[in-house]
Length: 290
Image 1 (cartoon, rainbow, N blue to C red):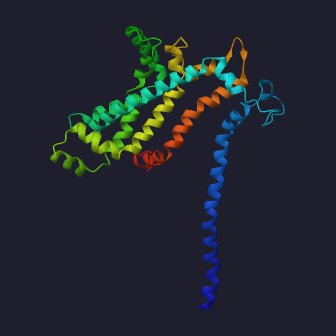
Image 2 (cartoon, helix red, strand yellow; image 1 turned 180 degrees about the vertical axis):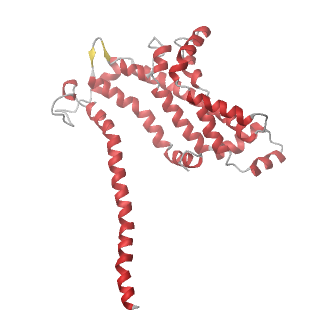
Image 3 (cartoon, rainbow, N blue to C red; image 1 turned 90 degrees about the horizontal axis):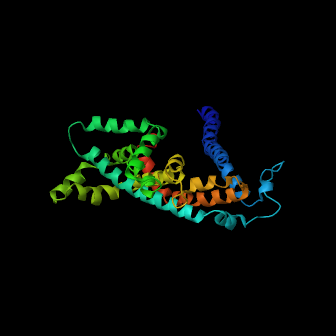
């Protein structure tokens, strides 16, 4: 008996050692993958502090001969880039707000109301996700021209403010809310709007945060639609403004990298601020692979 126990001890120790090594290996792999994803961003930030001639020098160097901090004020003054930032911020915030309101109401209808053909209508609504943006830009442009909205903020905001993705995301979360809460509110005389705004919406705050981040980034990074619908600097967005650094007057790579770094700051800040809600929302709304 003593001999058998002595022989099994190294096996147990070996198994414990493997379990200890697994988190270390996982962390190393995650670190390598993270660095691979961050490499372009790091190169962009470092290139924003170089002169245009040093960005493409061979062999490439991480740092230039001097830190060109003036690239940032020069980038903001080379074009009305501050105006581009404000335009994009307004469009992104307004579009995100509308998406949150419309998606919340439609998700409540599909999740909590009972009406004939609910599931069939929802499937058809989800089917619109398979239609690429490139297919609808031409009829959408013709519709905006009919309304007289070409080169306007409402044309940048409204066509994409009613999304099936937001409805699907919030509906999946609303289905997890216990029916007892809704029934208790009905006993107290609450209607659908009060139940949505006072009970379900506060519980679904993580899901709303996920949708807000996805929508804000989508509006902020949109390029094709602003390119088609706008032709004036008064409504130009950041994505189009960055392209103007590469024009007939030359290619200002240093200023472009500085402007790109500045344009990335709002979305990065939003993700950092809502990081805690993002993790909870993705896990609870059905997008976490469960």
